[in-house]
Every structure is written in C-alpha cells, then in structure tokens.
Length: 353
Ligand code: AMP
Ligand code: MG
Image (cartoon, rainbow, N blue to C red):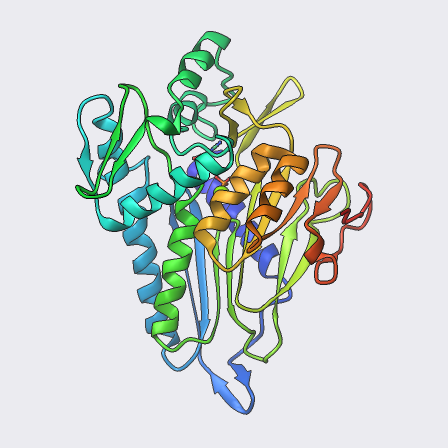
C-alpha cells in the first residue's frame, strides 16, 4: 500500500475502533459540561488520534501529540536521524550513547526478548528490512537471504551499558527495531501528559494501540472494539471490551501484508524461521501499561495460543485474546466475564479456557 492509502486504511480502522464511543457535542460528567478536543497525525507508520474531554482538552491534546512526535523522533528505525538509527549505523563498530528513555525501552524490550524465548526479538531489524512489507511490492526473499538475515537477529548481541547509557550491537549488519514497542510506549507518555493537564476522560488511538483513559464523559466505561481479523467471515468486530483506565493493544496479520499465490505475507516475523509468524492471526493484550502490552502483543502473536497464553498467565498483570489461524478465539480466563464476543458467524465464538 502507498503511504496515503495506508493512512486511509488506518483511519477506517480508527473509526471502527471508536464506534459506540463517540458522542455528539460537549461531553457530560454529572451536570458539568466538558469541552472536547481531537487531533489526528500520521507518525510511526500509522495514524494517531487523541480525543480528550476537560477544561484544558485542547492544550492537553496538543501537548500529548507533541510528546508522541518527540518519542517517534527518538525511536523510529525508519528515520535516519533517530537514536535507534544511530545505534544501527554503528553495529559492529562502537557503542552509542542514547537518552535515558531510549535506553530504558531497549532494556524492557531486551528483557521481554529473553522472557519470550526470542519470539519477540528487539534485534529483528534485518528481517524487517529484507522483507520490506508495505514497502517492496509483493516481494518474497529467497531462502539464502532469509537465512543470512535470520542469523543477524539475536537479542543477546545487544549490549546495554547501564553506567554509560550506551547501546551496542556486536555484529555489523545487525539492527534494533522498536516497531513492536514504541507506539505503546508513546501512548503511555501521551496519557501521562493528558493526566497532567487534568484530563480525566480520553482515548488515545495509535493504530491498534488504544489507551482508554478514565471513563467516557457520560460516566460509563469506554467500549473498545477488537477487530475481527477476517471481517469477510462474520463482520467488522470480533469483540467489545468495556474499559476504564485500560490499554488494549492488538497485533494482527491484516495490518500490513500482501497476498501472493494464495499465501498471506505480513509484518510480524518469527525470528526462528525468518518468515511471517503463522501461529495466530491476531493477538490482543489488555492491561495498564501500553509499552509492555505492545511488546507482548507481538510476542504472543509469534508464540501462538499455547505458549502465548502461558506467557501471559505467568505475568499475571495482563490478559490476552488471540485468534488462531482456524479463526477460533482463545482468551485468558479472567476475561470470560467481561469480554463481549460480537462476531456474527464463522469460527466457534468460544472463549476457551
Ligand atoms: P506490532 O504491530 O506491535 O506487532 O509490531 C509489528 C512491528 O514490530 C513490525 O512492523 C516490526 O517493526 C516489529 N517486529 C516484527 N516482528 C517482530 C518480532 N518477532 N519481534 C520484535 N519486533 C518485531
Ligand atoms: Mg506490538
């Protein structure tokens, strides 16, 4: 997809996600009428929309959006001026000093690379570049090239020096990629900004990363839709999660992909095979920290239902909903009472375990 087409696609997504959440005119909390502000910008390869209610909603939204832009500038591997790009340029050459924030997110991403047994791997960059999903047109690399790139992916070769605040990739050709983590981190920081401005009711929608801040202006919980990864089989929405102060992050094989000879090639790679992961078609993580939920959505997508949900149960502060390649819905047990399954037909509609 071209850039603007991707933008439109993301906008369509955003509209679906917010269905049922929008109200007309000013919001109400009790008898107090609240001003509404909303802003949409394109960054980190996606459309970001922030909607907030409150006396300083306009200022808050502007400041939160600027905060997200600042983080994108530090961490976007596709931006040659970012800190992440400087680390990658110096792979196999020298450690690079980075900001405290980039350092901390790299540390978190590295820790989850280890915890997920390398299903999430913060050094996945060579595979991202080789496949070029969304950039190179229907391009399937040959096995030798996949093998070469795969050998360059190993989080153990990312050396983080706590004292010096440097990051170093041991081998030339390696690269870090925070594409599976930075949107969530940016959403967390944007939420902090909104709260500092006194906003108590807001939605941050960063292309599959949602922060439902507080409740809706009418005092009811936000209703966040989880997209059906195969809308042709049973409608646009899979489920709705009533949400108060919750983040929902989804990784799906429908976000960026192409189909060639009947095979869907998408942007989430299994570092063990060097190819698009095939154990899930969508994975949603629900919790209170969007950076971690973002990392985990990618990890659980790669790990698939058994290992993925086992990882989430072990962590205890997150819940997960996953759709298998057979279009079955499986979820961690604590969600059973809350999640409203709305998919109309197809699959089993079973929330499993
Ligand atoms: P998400 O949509 O959050 O799952 O993130 C997908 C993005 O994460 C991709 O566009 C890549 O930049 C990056 N990515 C893909 N596969 C992996 C992986 N196995 N581990 C870590 N990051 C990945
Ligand atoms: Mg992710």
